[in-house]
Amino acid sequence: MKLRQEELKNVEVWEKAGFELPKFNREEMIKNTKENPEWIHFGAGNIFRAFPAAVCQELLNKGILNTGIIVAEGYDYEIIEKSYKKFDDLSVLVTLKANGSLEKKVIGSMAESLTVDTSNSHDWNRLKEIFRSKSLKMVSFTITEKGYSLVDAKGEFLKDVANDFTKETSAAISYNGQLLS
Image 1 (tube, rainbow, N blue to C red):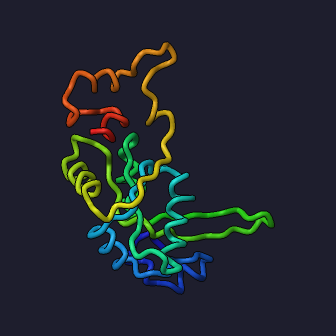
Image 2 (tube, one colour; image 1 turned 135 degrees about the horizontal axis):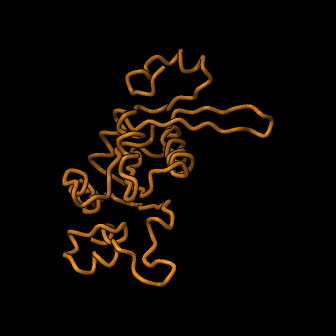
């Protein structure tokens, strides 16, 4: 078993291993999302995968949504390559229940994964395209102080933030600076 879109076609293998699979047409969801993005989320970590992505999957499973969620990471860029793209934007959610049993789900609600990086022209242009889209309805965040801090313990601007003040907005490097540009 490998966490790849093609491997999910082996439904019996996954179900035998105790996994609940997405109950929607994932290829169609990805197409719909790319054409008409509705929800983008900033912060690609575990909290995102366990909560917003799982909620989106539940809405897709029930037919309430026909578009998925786009995840963007602005601090730890390698998570996009190593944890998302490598696995076709699929994830596994394992929940330990009160009775000691495990609930296992393959989360497939992520349609795209992008870096919030002005030096990555492909991802940066796609982010701008998403924000220009009339279909965009929701922007959500699960970022930590690494992403939203502006000053250090002495009250001085962090290096990246101070650097942003000296450059054009298109050259921002702090998380907040890139989001605002």
